Amino acid sequence: MLRFAVPNKGSLSESAVEMLREAGYRTRRDSKELVVSDVDNDVEFFYLRPRDIAVYVGSGTVDAGITGRDLLLDAGSGAEEVMPLGFGASTFRYAARAGDVTDVAAIAGRRVATSYPGLVTKHLAQAGVQADVVRLDGAVETAITLGVADVIADVVETGTTLRAQGLAPFGEPILKSEAVLIRRPGTSEAQQFEVVRRRLVGVVTARHYVMLDYDCPAALVDAACRLTPGLESPTVSPMHNPDWLAVRAMVPRAQTNRVMDALYDLGARAILVTEISACRL
Image (cartoon, rainbow, N blue to C red; front, top):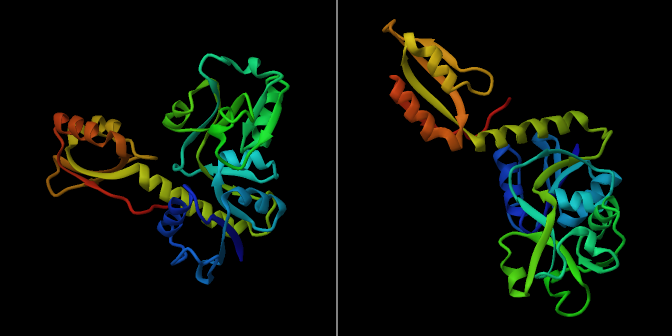
């Protein structure tokens, strides 16, 4: 049975549970459940602290799981990223008092407060910068105000919290993070893991695409198919009227209205958009 770790709380938890549910797996019914066994799908789910998941996967305690890319890289556990999951996006950056530090090189000799010491230490080493990395478990934004550090490295979303402390980000982002599927290399449950991976690919695809059905004049079908190439190629079917063909294709959700307008201008009619609940590629 595949042992799979799921964030038990935090910003990734609810979305991770919903994605697994869409993929057809049993999920916990309340926050007090720590282990859920899905016998039908040969998977056992363990609800763990997001920060610990990469450590458990890397050590082989569990076979795979969902966590943030930032937490994975910070752990340095040997677990590997398999695929991004399309939620929990964040940007990890340095920040300091406005105008005090303007580039990474200027961090040399200063104190850097962060909840991700492994990630920051590695990034500074790659940049050839020597600095004192101070580990904090939370409230990193106040570290400079309290005199604990000269620079912070933390997740930046809107920047509102930074501005409230008189701080401003500088330099290029250290990392762009999001939720990722991770695994332990060489797991003995490779077959079960591949089923989970394939199902999650299907959910991610379904969230980014819709199914488009339309009727098209036969003489214009090539032009219409160029507008809706689908993931591989569209399905084209004959109709009772030989001058028309029925076409079905998956199109990116964000482009749906533009594609529908272009098809209508081309001469297509009866254009129907259908949500995809899940798919297998």
